[in-house]
Length: 75
Image 1 (cartoon, rainbow, N blue to C red):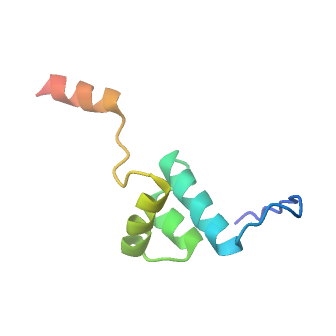
Image 2 (cartoon, helix red, strand yellow):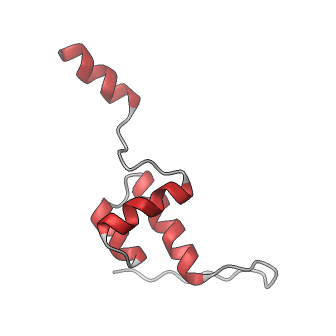
């Protein structure tokens, strides 16, 4: 596992736990992490993390529109 260290200005007030949840949600959204990996990074069960995704406007089912259209055309 990699470790990332960020140096931010003092006026930026970030809660470490909140920042990790946000990062996990966005990495899941971008397809960099699976739901299991993202939930583990954030320190939650898959079910709990699935509910947290909505707080960051991240869809649980991340299926591109182009794939939906392609799948529908095959039916």
